[in-house]
Image (cartoon, rainbow, N blue to C red; front, top):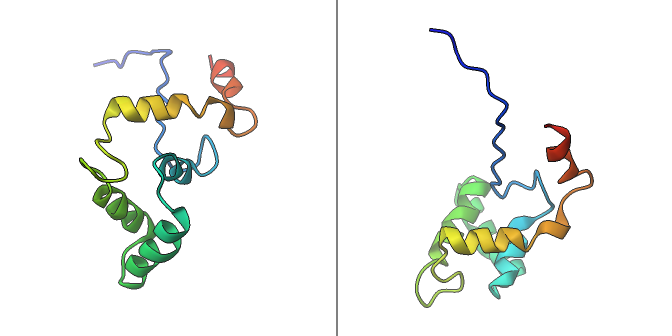
Length: 102
């Protein structure tokens, strides 16, 4: 079977600082979380216990999601809204790069 050629490119934003610097810290700060404590103390403690750094951060983020917790009910829509607020924070050359790939 022959594969179909398409001109569609998907770009997925995944909080790894590819598109803009330190989006994770921006998300935490936007919810009033002390990032020095979160990243410097809490995450460091998990890393010293053997956690891989990204797993430590994600574990802590999940512990802060939920009703009455700092990140609240972190829905897809709330993440979309947060992402929309970052439009002026892209690395140099973005989002023009996406227009150029067309």
